[in-house]
Image 1 (cartoon, rainbow, N blue to C red):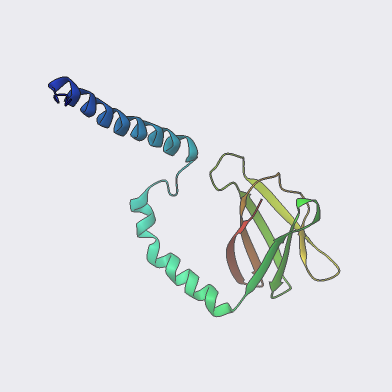
Image 2: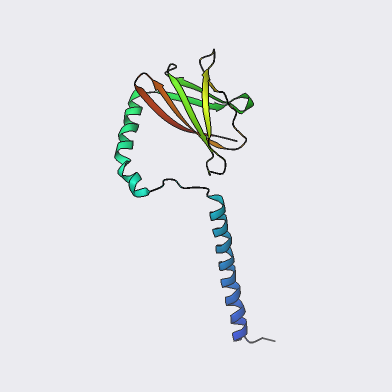
Length: 147
């Protein structure tokens, strides 16, 4: 016995299909809005005006040949080994999604030549921005620290 496909059946198919699409879109929009905690740049036009200068600064930094090795140490302090070993090191730890306040990092030099932050980082993932100065030269590095 065959049943006839009526307009009512078509209505249920269309409501089911579009209802599913709308529900998925609403869920995805909610996740997108709730997980992005900030902006990348305040004004993309102004940032584009500085792009060539930033590239020149990056090339000049690469020409210095400086490097850093960053890792999470005991007690959630940041440990950094740098080339060159002299100079001063400052840092700022930022939460990648902007959900936690930035943490200013002060470093002290240990007897083995490594830099160690004086303050521990709270649990979670962090992006650390470091500035290494030696004489008149400055190099900036950005490294992610896993949870």
